[in-house]
Length: 295
Image (tube, rainbow, N blue to C red; front, top):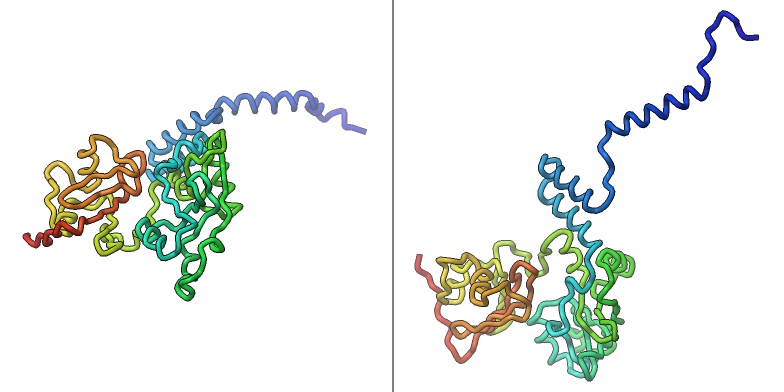
């Protein structure tokens, strides 16, 4: 039996109402949650402005958000710029092509460039060291074909679970329209990724043949002139990529080529902002000037 002198307990409905009121009051004290991707970006910008996030973290998170809005068509290497191998050629003929381009994976076609039969991994050609007569066809792996409309975040997930690093892009009619690699997708998030030519951070020019070289777009013009004995102007430009952009009158694209002082300079790697890698082919009939050793 309850003590008549004790106060009546608070009704349950009163407790419930007070809790509900507390939640409503505290909800006004908390910042509103992001409603969409633009709100998330606004929060990130505020965090960056307050130095809660550094520049690298801000760029990576923003890049991850942007990837969800991009499709393969936005970043793919177009068909006209694809480096491909003809399966009918012997290894002795395609090895120079592989060395020249420096890629780790190549689409392989038969009869016609639209008829891609698979992908060749450069590392698989190590077998030819012990067996020079080995045929190319057994080394070719199945190719992965994807539509132009596939979103990059979905493609990245598929790359991860399938362990593929390269996909062939097809248009709505089934024709080959380009290719895209895992590195292409990741660069949308983390920025430019250095490849196997970047082992020495100080070195930006690499010889790939008797009269051919591969140079980074960030190669300083003074270094380029000293290496090749050329006279590229360096008053208005600091880098080889900057000079090339000025010569072309626009941002260089993969496949762009220019002749200068007996050398052919071709863009073999570029992004939306600048040339990344250039192939330098010297005309053997034109003597290469001696390197400039003046201080």
